[in-house]
Image 1 (cartoon, one colour):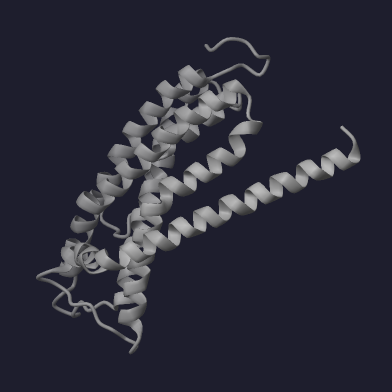
Image 2 (cartoon, helix red, strand yellow):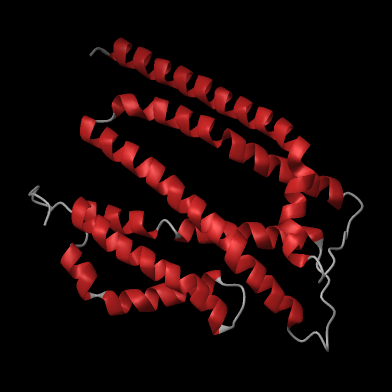
Length: 244
């Protein structure tokens, strides 16, 4: 390929990248417009664990407007996510090998399902319990009143990191696929894995009580077991041999 052809190819790729970024951004804008319709019920769902307990406070005159548009943006991102993922895939797939394509089509739905499971688990199970605990702790000394901005950031960060933590099986399968560890090594170091999962659970859990940490830790240990099974399937020795 000549230098002129290489330049033309690079320009074509940049043009395609620009077009796909525009489409992804347009999907986000459209999703946000739709999200503005459902922002109020979405906010009601987010604050529902606090009903009957603490009352959220507005600390700035414009904070309610900011929170409303943030909620619309979150909903818009959720609605636009399939389009955005499609644009990314459509851009990178032509440069992948058939084997890499098979891995991609396997990892994407599995990763999405694990993340969604983590978000649902944290939202429906861990978060309500955690907030109830926080609202009743030292209530004889303090009155629990949270700002809207702090509460929304707290919920978003907690739900996000639990969702990310639920990607643990894919991370284990990936490092096994790359040959960094073997399934036998992963099985033989299960004691260290329990300690690491306990530390991760403590970092994610916003309360210091062991029960809430255990609620997060038990599913993560189950996901570690799933990761061992996936590692057994995905593992390839560095020499290029078959799976163990």
